Image (cartoon, rainbow, N blue to C red; front, side, top):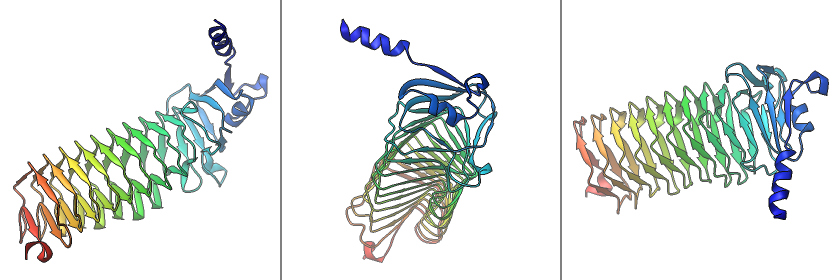
Length: 345
């Protein structure tokens, strides 16, 4: 009985803080955070543009826009420095940011350093999210458009972080090196029911997964481009898992759909359609892909000079295609699969 009373007592004392609230001396979102208790409070933010950089200070608070996502903006760009929101004090998923347009003044609009907040229904324009130092944030129903960075145009994940992206859309993002929309390096990460459209990079137009155990489930890649390799994705090292995904209309010099190297990826129930490689591997370019498995996948109407469906070379012993179909691919050599000298000899 004592525990029940204590729980009710805490709930009754959770406060609602309005931003702005001139009578309470609250003009900014940060003022609202500063006024909040350590946990349980809700900060309700009226429509407007808030030129600031918000730090949640480790508090388990819910910061919620009361208007539309387009009408409620946190814009650190006006400050000339910093992200729109920082989570670096061990926040958990009970710290919630909901319903904002977020703009950073530097590389990323949101920074999660070893923290695991929840970010819901937000819109990222020009800059996105960086997760590192082991954090595991949940990012759900968010859009990332027009991001541009050296690595990871919209999202950069590394050093053991394990973020979860659900129902997110990545469109027209650009990286100048690797991962047009997303880069995951030496980390994990889960992407479920996400779309990647018209993103570009030299390596991995849609996503780049490097030495990581990332999972992609029911994710759709369309029209992504890579100057060098992996129009849809560039997978090197690690052991990523792809389930019920689709790669369509990707273009690259090699691997219009996916490029895999030294990567025992597991790919199942995934379709590759209308991908184009200027050189090899319209759908897939596999290099030293020992242990990779493709199960119940469909390769339809992919095109390349060598290996319209897949181009496989160098150390890919143990690679398996199980119950897969290759249809209507075109190439000068190997319309379905081209086995390079190291495989075919």
